[in-house]
Length: 411
Image (cartoon, rainbow, N blue to C red):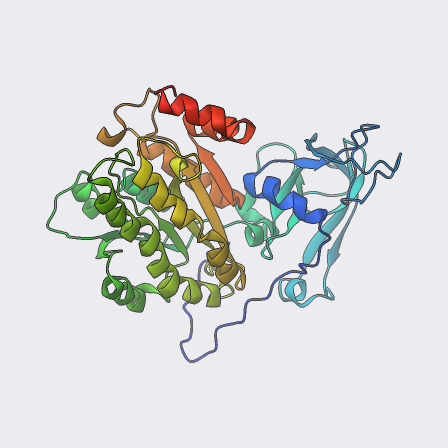
């Protein structure tokens, strides 16, 4: 990725172009696994043959039963070419663009986006990734560890923090300081961390102030004015926004304090997100093609309790579930500029609020490491922590059974 060139304020910001997005309904089934970083292809339940592209029926036996199945990632490049003047405007603006025909180890041949170091006859590792239009596409890179930062086509599909400016909305979050450190280590130009009621001390404040490239800025997500003021200062600069807004007050639904506490948590988690969306999302979407390091991603750090209700965290789960329900509207707004929306589901963290949960619990460092890796990989969803992964799996299989176990304190 090139170093960013200082923009001439008298020149118009480029309109963000998107790659072709027309797909069949069957092809849309590939979006979830691509967003999770999985390599799953349609495989015939009758004869076992893999298929690509996604067909309406098996090309071998015509069976209509083609569930997505984990597939081998290997393949061999049959031919490679470089498109100097592509027909589509998105690719023409980014030309030259390398494509190749790959014979996949699982059987089919596929036209893929090709790493610059891969050529005819080379072994490659395939990835199913989301492009700027949010559609699943295939990318092939040489086998083995590779520096994907050297591949401009991969960078078009990822959200690498390198050379970008980042806003972390809540400096008090357990992962805020590790996130700032990890993002700066990954090459971020600047990291701002939002702080409400600055007179209140918190762990990590001195470390943040001493961190070169990091800056605390006033931000209270409960205040329209505070969010609006920061957006006027930074809205045209933020290229990655990491929403760590969180307020935890445990309690059963019938506890007298729960309604008031739930309103307080809703103000931070749900209405706070709405305020951020109103002030920052349109500006980021409009800068999806701005310079060499355009706006790239919005990350919502969300407790897994938002998707798996827990009876002892009724208000907390409700507030974050409401925030999670805003994701489609936020994704649509950001998507007009090709900006990625990523949801990072986290398990219980190593804080006093989750002292009743068994170990291992998540550290801020673990959350930060996973989020930075997911940004570099262009992911749309990640689940952090063994407990969070276990809960989501059990919830998908039998939500009522998991509900009963959680009510009995079984984790």
